[in-house]
Amino acid sequence: MTGAAGAAGTIFRVQRTAVITGASSGIGAATAAKLAEAGYRVVLAARRAGRLEAVASEIKEHGGQAEVHTLDVTDRPAVDAFAAALERCDVFVANAGGAIGTETVEEASAADWLAMYEVNVLGTLHMTQALLPKLVAGGNGTIVVLSSTAGFVAYEGGGGYVAAKHAEHAIAATLRLELSGRPVRVIEIAPGMVKTGEFALNRYRGDAEKAAAVYAGVAEPLTADDVADAIAWAVTRPPHVNIDLVVMRPLAQAAQHKVHRVLSDG
Image (cartoon, rainbow, N blue to C red; front, top):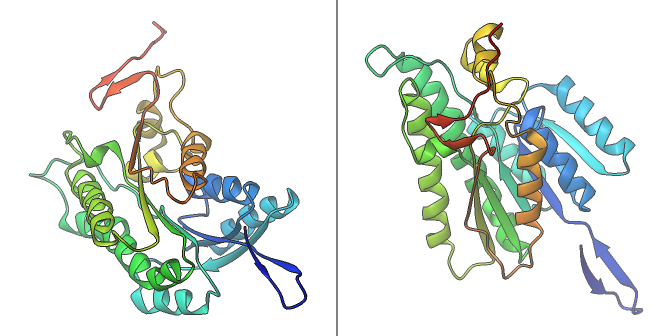
């Protein structure tokens, strides 16, 4: 919250606004809830209106303020219209993204790679460009880029997603340099193994058995709430403190290829 004295000495409170993309489920929905708890008015953006409404209703039931906007971050005219309609934006969480397929580079579909690049990379670019004037105008803006440990280490079958997340890491690092001297922080959160209801399922094109195998034997992968906690903590640091990069993994995951699994004989 920020305050300003009126003509009669009254203190008016301006509620800070956080925009979260990909807010209809998973990390985005959990982040919206955490930031609402922290006092932000949250603006939920994603493609699925019904899911957004459900997330917003739950936030409101707990006393938070939330509004929803159906938005495809790859549609630049729609993004520009969305940004123009906002009264203010103090925090932008670039969470929209995802992975498609596990094919090798040799066998991968260029269409899948393009789809991943458009939502993970160009979606972040479109939203950042559209919201940046308001983030600067507020005098204390924050951009949070949700990347991944895939943005640092390649692995077999992940070429397209790895490339997209490397690009998101580059966006965050470049923005931090280019915005030096302006009142906008750039934070990057890079999770490792996170178990949500949809990420692996989407990656395996709806094959529930293959999606479940990703987490087999891992007692406690990260949850959406774990990542949302880290985002909320970074965002709520004092304005002069920038948390450049948070790399977070479950205890069971020492590295991309080193995961401790306890599998039953049955």
